[in-house]
Length: 298
Image (tube, rainbow, N blue to C red; front, side, top):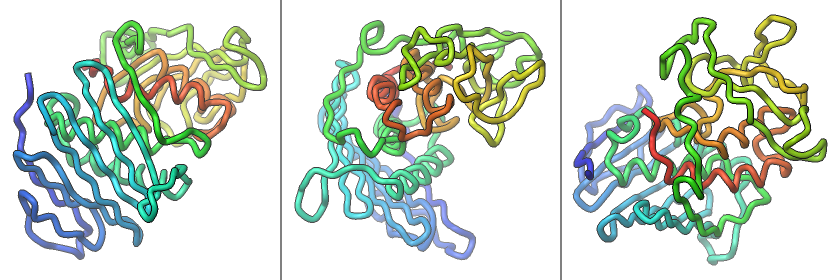
């Protein structure tokens, strides 16, 4: 059932002030997020550290959503049909329509936008579909590696395109919060890279998925009976937990999708590699359909 939720939010720095706007009246603030919705869809703008993003998401026919995000001379588009698990994504230079690649400054600005959308929108399925799919697409683009083509057809179907791991995101009977020492380990978090394949123990982790702990590093990992915050660099099958391991998305955001491909991607970027490492590109590409189409676990 479609959620009918029309909202209007303006989040700005304290010095900006201003009244909440609705409908199509969404002026750009000096700093922060301006977000509005109408029966035609959702649109808004975001200003951050002197940079500007404009975005829109609308339902162009029943169950089909058209997305557009513009920033730093780059236009990102998406056409999503969730019921059939089909989407096309693209990105090109606004000036001449030429193919473009995502850069570090683009990812940083999109990450800031994603965090603001998470704060402004209702969590999970409570958000209007136009807003939820906008949030998911922005999250995908905020993680996009430099060396992966922005033009992409995405096919997602449960059991074929993505496999859910909702039960492994729970511990001690809880979806969130402390595990109380009672863990539910997923034994197949793995990746392949220059060190070896999925079957090499240094590319494997025993992971407690879910939103249970957080730290300033990639995760908590067990070292000699002590939990440390950081990233074990290709240790042999270490136990890891924290920072929403296995969740689709760039951090603990508005959706709660835990899948096999997202877990493998985390196992790569949190195990001796970085977000844009070429060795993790295959895991990233495999997880795109999960983030766009997989249902929320809770």
